[in-house]
Length: 149
Image (cartoon, rainbow, N blue to C red; front, side, top):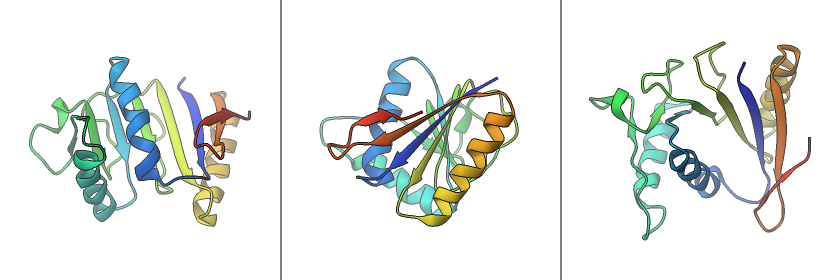
């Protein structure tokens, strides 16, 4: 069973918070798949990840490009796990597949978006009832993550 983590964005945007979590994932030797709600969001995040910081490089690709299976970080709107990721990041209120072989599912949701908060609550109930180990993290005013449950 996958570990399921919920990251409640209260002080920053997804674009500000996600790159650091992806960097840590890759540093641990894990591949990641980031599941987004639309092609437009996927493409926007793709552009952002190339430019979010001058002193870093986060190798990644999208599901619309050749060799998606070779990417350490794959941005997608699909439910599959084409790059064999150990970690699935689910953002923008997307719903993950029932089981894609990932060891960890990370839901990141905007605390200022009622629909995303409601979807996160639903996913919490589903995964808790399914026997998964679930944890909840919320941003502090300093934009650090604090475990709440």
